[in-house]
Length: 438
Image 1: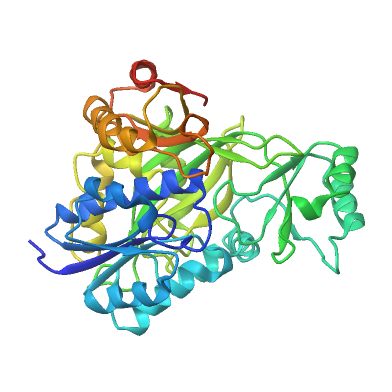
Image 2 (image 1 turned 60 degrees about the horizontal axis):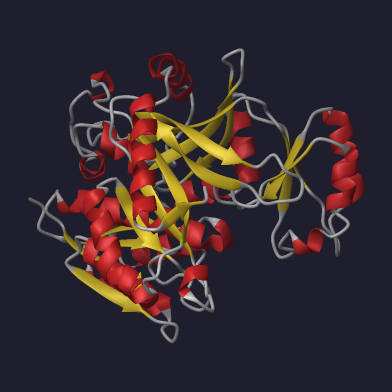
């Protein structure tokens, strides 16, 4: 047993939004990652310290942490964060890459001489920049969509965008250069759509951020989750372990509305086939900047060719499902990454997991306090797949106007079984007056 303190921090649920309204969708994924990583590090014998936004204090009962410190709107969350870092021996950080948030939080832990079990600074610098990642893929001679920085002088250069669209002769994607996951991705098929979008782009794009234009690759949205270790006897050699390959359900084919991440499932149906392809590609890539757990998003085209899109230098939402399909604790490999381990590449997945966010509308008569105290505990008992309990974060005049969000992860034998289980879960929600919107 480790019996040492580890500080596990997740930005959205841990006070990163303490001055503003917490984004419901991001919160669902964030809290799900926080809760599952706490559970898995706890199994290793760690004493767990974490932070929680005071507005979701009631969710502390579902966290297996030893110390939970609350952050309110008057707190400097960085100060509280730093205090927790100093109090711990190890740190594991889950935060967005944009605005250098993940980098700065990791640097605080490094400056305080703590052992960081999440991705280190070099990997964050590379993965946080879509343009640096694009050049990294080119240097490593792997397929990747053509990518360009959109010039900006008081406004985005529409002529540049139209010119590249004409040259590429295919649909294009526009997204932040330091974006996270499916955040703020816009898809365009025609010149007219692009012109119409940029007539009022100031309302859709954050002018303080840089944006890129990328050719759209048609195919399956997938990701590979990897643990990269460095054997102590051969520090120049990397020990890449593919945990799983995951399907991502992303809705972004709309030139007006923002993209939506709906979840995913793991492993993919053609897992063994894809794993063999990816292992050969990864063996020839210099991934030495990435230690620990990270993910690579890619597209599999109809001809089975692979196009790498971006690198996520942190734990990703897919972990919530991956931990359900393995018969070993993935985080143990992160902690023991410099020690000999089982040949995990020969181990097979034991189960299947579909993970997704539910948007629910409450149509009953109970107040929000009654829902929290009476209904949510019953749902948690009836639906063990719930990772983030139903919660309403947006303001409303009456409780029945609240939209509730939750996150689930199944554990079944295959996709069909998971779909059947999700149907039963929806029926249980309905029995408790929660209508599923999506």
